[in-house]
Image 1 (cartoon, rainbow, N blue to C red):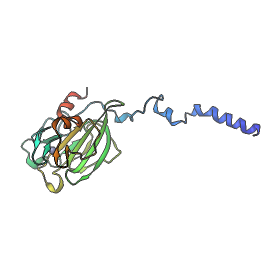
Image 2: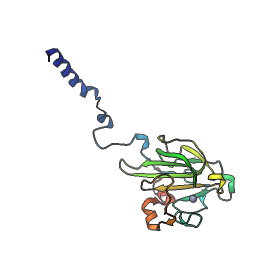
Image 3: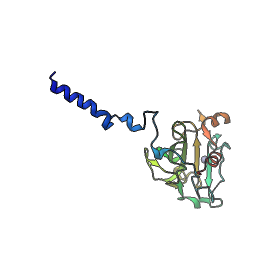
Image 4: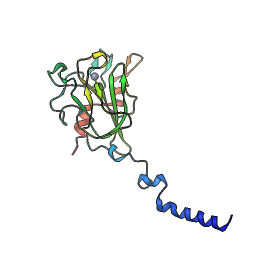
Length: 209
Ligand SMILES: [Zn+2]
């Protein structure tokens, strides 16, 4: 190889650290992979009503109440404006925290569903799921911020339910629309709590400062 080529190679090698063209250095120091800044949470709000949930209440199935309709322990909370009947149909639903939409779509049992993944640290995640929606305003892959309107309260497939928000918080990764039942047999309560969180308790323990 001629000397001219060696000079070019040396120059290219010298330029690499200066331009930082290695993608690894863009991650900020070569540590473990970090979520995008927006994805980190700064606290949790309630998904309907005021940030503290005021004006709304869990008047339908509560967390872990037995649901004979679905033959299972209810893995979330059914939120309503008390006494409104279907008057809460079309009310806004908010992302409870910063996160990334990992599912936004239709399910034959739950209707329109949104699932959001939240990083509570660079290694710890929780998920929030919003079901029976009338409208969905975000799509898979989108980053959302706490309190961002993501859709509206609906009635589920073919208006199967009185209008309410079915809301879940999960501490383990599960497919969207997962339900604590296998081949028609309900999971034990203790198994449900291995995967799902009590939404109100979790949010109250993690309010923004
Ligand atoms: Zn429900």
